[in-house]
Length: 277
Image (cartoon, rainbow, N blue to C red; front, side, top):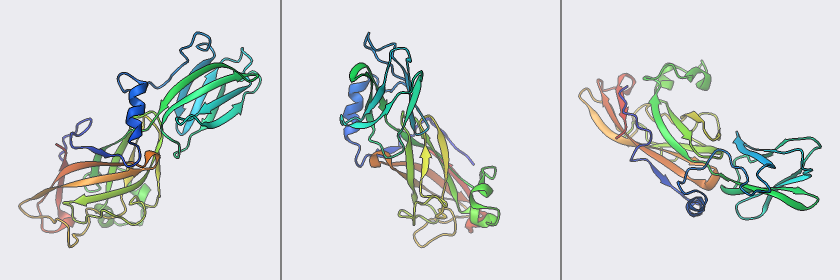
């Protein structure tokens, strides 16, 4: 398969449904817009109390000093309301809060208290940022774990019509992908798939700094439907769109790919070449 890969396609688009306010929030937090993986308190009285705040998977981990008599740590969400609180154990230096994938993205504040008095505060921007990096077919990528996903009872002809989509989270918070769809110049475009559009799963959790492959269940490159583009002995070319929907912020993220079909009149023997501008 021929591919021109770029870190981020200039034709990649992000349609924010409910996350518009995040842009202004993020702009106030960092001069360069790039959240640091860890934040510590900048105040002279608190810099040696809260040592580290980091997101690991879907959990917020806080490391702190055990020598100042802390008895409670509060986590305040971006709207100023209490997200959760925990009492500290004697001699402990770490605790964690489960964020999950239903949290409000934005700046979170960690407050360390002793006897009701605030000893230190520190903040961290927690916000996912997902990008579609790649798309490929079984016929061009047989070494992907297709049998692991679809099972060894599925025929190669069935898997030949499916596709994988690689998604990366470059943000600072976890997210969950809840829908995958294909539209445009493909043999079987399905803009509104049944279920999630992913094979036998309703969602795929993607922690910050990681990437994952989504496997389709709608046969986007299977037999040609009435509205689909087929193969040709000469060449048929066009473009198609991959769209994912996420849980945190309710975002739709899409990427447009060029595609060429050649070498046969039958999709089962077609040579499919996908590339990006």
